[in-house]
Image 1: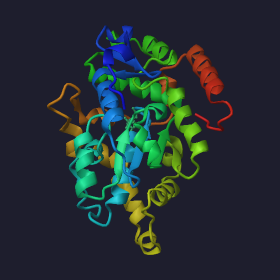
Image 2: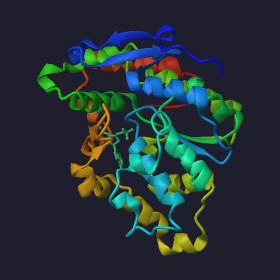
Image 3: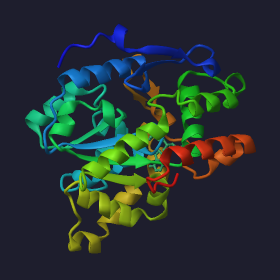
Image 4: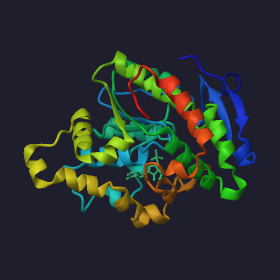
Length: 313
Ligand code: A3P
């Protein structure tokens, strides 16, 4: 592929609600933070997918950490039972490599292991071509838009070390509503994967965060089957599914020492405290933040954008 010059391909926006601390780049119709934008371009230029790769794809704050933990626990359960799982001592994001930042590790996995999982926030139209050409499986998680906005607001605010008083939610909402957010517009992110799922039946599994909470057992079974690690009758009878659900639950993961006090990518500019990936995990938390006017605006927009998909957010 022809080399891309970053300067020629992006527009920039500095978020007003972040007091100038958050700058996003627009590239191929989506916004991103600088280093992940660069990571996306690098992946587009050099990543070689293998047909056995399974991609965990998501918009930020839709339940990525949970899905990564579940997919990791499912694929590695023959090697580690729940009492020995790396998830007990390692942030789920470090158990599954991230395409935008971990190309080297993914290449190592390709050479040395048969570990199939790779995660990414890259929108479908921007995915490296080799992922599409290799016809890889993709699991996509999505979540109620209003809860995503609240989760996103707190995550970015805490990451930028801002107090609630200094980061007006109304402005953050407005920006998100305009499509300007990390990986935004959210509805276009969903639509890209949804359209692809229509074009590539059986290759893209859609999971809804709220459904997974309501009925984890059947969702975990579906996930395991889809990624090629179905549970046997013996495992079902032995309670393996329930054990995995318990291991990956918010209550369990958020109380582990590593997730309370550890740091993710401590040596980098995007270093972040692990605890920021675990906030409340509560459906409907948006009700404390949204005015009636905000609800009306965002519901109307999302209804318009996703009409015809059958997806309900
Ligand atoms: P809240 O901010 O609403 O609490 P992501 O992993 O995509 O960054 O999404 C983060 C959201 O998922 C946060 O939502 C976080 O609390 C929630 N979360 C993290 N781990 C979870 C788990 N094991 N089960 C359910 N939700 C989880």
